[in-house]
Length: 358
Image (cartoon, rainbow, N blue to C red; front, top):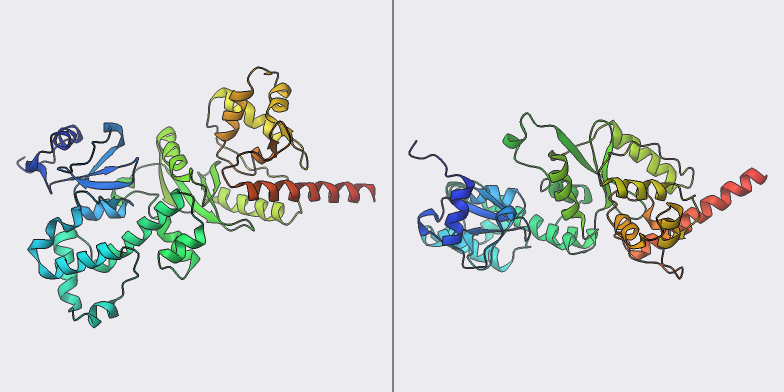
């Protein structure tokens, strides 16, 4: 057919060649930077495995990618409509502004005219575009280790639940791409240490991490690749069970979890994670002690790497491992959380011992 979409390989070749014949026909979303570009962008070209091609700007924004500052794909259309031109310039200057209909009216714009112009050129309204830009900026802030509440405020969300719902939308795929697929379900769980993201299926837990963990976006990407499943917002009975056991844990009532954990990782990594779960509540050990306990005295560094690769916080208690000198060492959720968890578990253990003695 004349208008059959070129394959991704053809589009990647066009990207490398900066072929103007494909300009505006498709856009490249770069997963390593979370930026989308025109195919004629002068920036350094990404690796093929980091490229996803979308047919339009709306799809790029809805997938959580930000417009490139070099090729400025949004402003490509600015000469076609003065209304679009002016509003895109305003959005470019204030990407985190929370635009409302009243703002457009106050600036002298007719709402229906603005809506039609943006729908015609981008497939979404100006307000939808502005909202996705804010959410994209917030996701970037979280990826860089920013606090959830700061990202929420900067994105202009008054409601924490509304902000998390918006971020959730960046995790999944367009509805059409989910038909017939087995899905993992992602949802947020509130804890005294901040919100955590739980990703589950109908039977087991695949990921549990604090929302502001810098490596979380990469962990989600690796999970999608390794499981070959898409992720959508939602809950399963596993989510409800996990929420219940975490409530009991944080209240100091129980440290028994009983949630089935999916079998990710290499055989060695799973052995390390099993050894972590065997460390009693209220106790800690060093990497070398953990390696010795496993009968792998010469594999201390490998044990440390496996400890760092754990993506099930708290239930697989990597926070119970300290440096050789007893100091707190790196923890993806932040050292302040590691200290809190260790002290919390020591209090739990002491309370249990006193109740047994009584």
